[in-house]
Image (cartoon, rainbow, N blue to C red):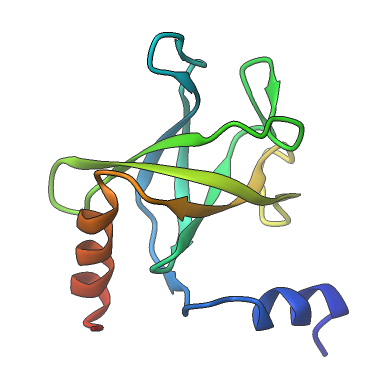
Length: 132
C-alpha cells in the first residue's frame, strides 16, 4: 500500500513519467552578469512533459543548499543520440535516494520553466515515448 506522501505526489502529477537515464549537468543560475555555481554531474531517473527527476551525488550545488536557494536551476540534458538541450527549472522536492550505492545520492524533482530549450525538450519526450 502506498504511503500518504506517495499518494499525494502521484496524484499531483500533471503528466505521466517515463523512465530513461540521460546524463545531465546542473548548476544554479546566478544571472546573466553573475555567472553560475560549479556544475554537478547528474542523470535522469525519469522525465515528463513538465519536469524531470534527477539523481544527484549530493543535495547541494557547490556551497548552495538546493532547498534554501530559490534561484532557478540550469540543466544541460544530454540527448540520446548526440548533442544536448539547455533547460531552466525550479526545485520541487529533494529526498535521499534509497537506491544509492554510496549512500550520499539524492533524488531531485525539477519543474521545468519556459526557456529556449523547452520546445526541443518537449519534442524529445514526444519522440522517445511516441506520444502527442
